[in-house]
Amino acid sequence: RGQIAPQPAAGWPGPHHWWRLSLCMLLLLSPGTGTGLLATRGLDRSRQGPPPGAASASAQPVAGDSLAAPSRLGIPRVVFLPSGGGGDDLSEFDLPPAPREGEYGSALASPLAGEYADWGSLARLPPAQLRGSDLNELLQPDSVQRLRFVVSPMEAYGALFRWDTVFAGLRGLHAAAWAEVAEAHGLPFDAEDSDRTVGRRPEIAVTQVFRWQPALDDWGVAQALSYEFCEALGRRFSSYAFEPRPGAVRLLTLLNEYQVPCCLCSELDERSLSDKVEAADMARFFQASICAEDGAETAEQAYLASCVKLRRPPARCVVFEDSPQGVSSAKEALAKAVALVGKHPAYEMMHADLRISSLEDLTLMAIRELFSGEEPR
Image 1 (cartoon, rainbow, N blue to C red):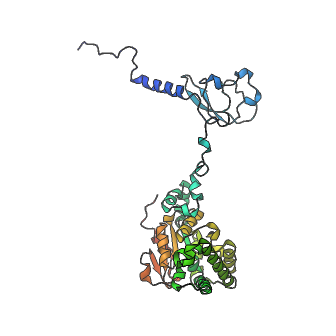
Image 2 (cartoon, one colour; image 1 turned 90 degrees about the horizontal axis):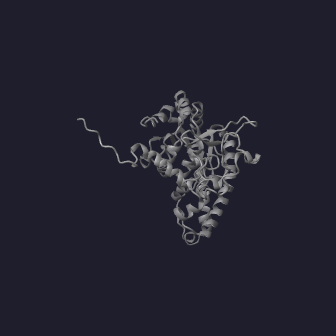
Image 3 (cartoon, rainbow, N blue to C red; image 1 turned 45 degrees about the horizontal axis):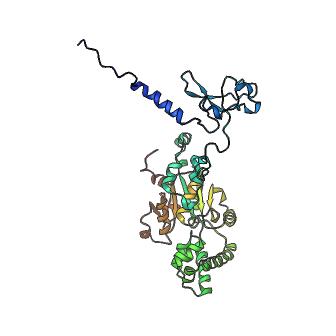
């Protein structure tokens, strides 16, 4: 009691002075900041132009730009210049000249700048580089879409259809075309293996499904066999009239009525796909399609590319498949899978979220219940 508290030594800054020292060091170490629109005042006179009175008209800043003007404490503050056109008096700002080209190094010219320039750059990657977990984050609805989904809940989901679940006959055409190529070259052929080739590039089918030895030793042979397969399939495909499966028209009409976007996935080229779909009078049901030009090498890549086109996260999409391999691809893409039993027995597709014997058995509430366990975001 009665004693005076000890004071810090003279000349040593107290705690309240540290922020000023940090600011001074920052200004001394960075004589110029900004990318052309942002600059500081009076930090490096050697890089400044003539005084404001002698500045030419070409050195005047453009209206609408953001500049750093001095404040009372000497700290640069951002000022947005008016954009009302000519006649604005900017003489009160002691502005440095615009930065020269390349003044700030090559960081802005990085090759990754074009790929990651905006939030949607991930969706422009090729199908082989897409990941379901990334798309689940990227394609989440914004606040406006959430309000719309409150009024129309089913619009928040997407439906992806493999060609064989809507149209019948394509697998038979594939099997006949591969059998013709195998017979012409004396290669072994199994009809069950041809089912695994649907949705894959012909070169991948030759080397990884059939594993024909001449193609394994030489990639050129694999391409030659693929060309022969495409020619054989094209001859059969051009004269074949596809018809929708039972219940396909009813289901697609119901989905369009509730504004659920639909995508048709196929390995056909864009022209052949559009011609056959229009000939069957089914084009009005699909808002997007995946064809050979999209570059999807597997069924999983096709599903992820479909989610990008529909702008729906994979976790909110349902895939209609009729093979165990297709169901596995849908699960790998983090989507729901509805298995169409018939070509394969039900016990081979136990990993599907729902199994049906025909599209006529499917209701809208059954599709909605597939997503009943997900948490709203």
